[in-house]
Length: 389
Image (cartoon, rainbow, N blue to C red; front, side):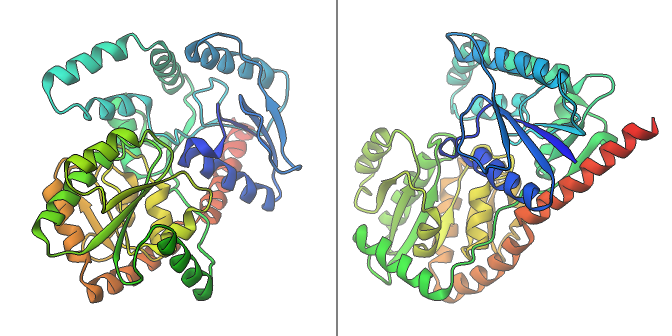
């Protein structure tokens, strides 16, 4: 089977969706599928993947995105594929997979970052003038109202709700294929080496409670909320903890916030890494107080590594977390008292160990191999539909 994958950017440094795409392609290749990638990037991929680096004209991101979608549609029209699987809203898609969730929900949750009505109104006004957002929103709306519509892959129940609420998209055209990650195959010796090395590098004792947060978009993923919660815990003095924030972002404003809150010695910024698994091995739990994630791979990776997690109901991966069993799910990222309380509970070693064991079991269910297999079955369904029409 010959599959075209369409995604505007695929650099892993950009975040989880791009990392997932790379892993996903590897599994498709092992399944024997022929994959061609249409992207603006120039990725170093497997030689089995033919990469079409699509030329996109324009001085602005909006024009480049618009040009990419238009030129990709032209290139796809000149070739023959069994299935066109688009992660960007390309009108030629047989299968549309909004790995970042629907664009309209992304917009709504970005507005939720503003705590005041005036702030939300100002943000809404600036969004109206964001031409790229308007372009992508219009392309997605055109695709999802197309006749006949594409089959849409939802990474979680949260994404299904988005499709139904924002677009009244027909249930018959939605397929839930839960997000997946590759398993953590490190043996106990490697885990211990990572734990020792990371903790020594950052001046953290072997028995200190280490709370990890992994994010590229610090604002959207609730780094400020974690600093506020850390200040509550530090003020109480009951829980002795240290915390590392791992990822690419403007750390300066958050470091100053930690200083003002009196927790700069407890919450430190480790910067980006391509060895995030080592940080999972070094940590005792993960906090992910996100304002928006269609289905966070960070949470799934942490579960697979045996870490209990604390996330929010605005994360599609929360459905993999059995609240109070393998981690905790908060009603709102704004509830810093609840976030502090859940970390306080996880400071108890017996509870944390039991929940870590349950987290491992949950993580095993969210595999990228299973995700790719289910996608392959969907491809076959799409081809069968076409041949019987």
